[in-house]
Image (cartoon, rainbow, N blue to C red; front, side, top):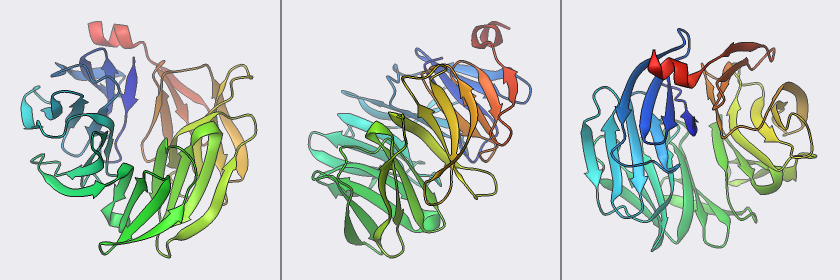
Length: 288
């Protein structure tokens, strides 16, 4: 599989194989249904688990929302073209479209596709309205923490954000070269300065475990064999333990409230014990 996506609001996973979108029931190890994507996702796709929608961005055609139940198009937004990044708010309250022509980030209504808000001169954004959190990245690589339509600028100083996770007033961030940082979005300040985990190049995705006591991350260590590690960090981003190790994969997704991790190679791990729970054969699942 090229891409695997999970949602806090759904028990199934969405996998992408070329332009085929497959809903996977992890517990039964079967494909629930498969639909043909409106156009090849090319990495810019999100899974709205609560609604069972896939939202896909195309450089020239804009953004389309497609039902995973029957493949029908729910809405289109042909104005949201030139998307460089597509994200979904953690609480699924917004579809987030970042683009560079012009440099801005759009928040789209997930039910209608209409533009609800624009952040000009930004390159990325993360949203969790349940946490009262909106974090946008400006062109000068500062983070703008928005509360009540007012923003506080906090220096980030790193070129991009790979992944972000909100938790109890904190915003955890993973960035290039294995950097991790934590921001206090209530007080608008850095809580843990960006720090690099030894030997790591990339840490994504990130998620908190089921009891929210630790941050979990998939760490890529290019000089190790196997080179991917499921790692736990405390709230100060100090490594706690190596939970599981596996080969290089295209991607991975946390599911079951952080209790499990599934990789694009079809391996399902318990994120507490590191036990390999299952090994899925995607091709066989699709053909059966």
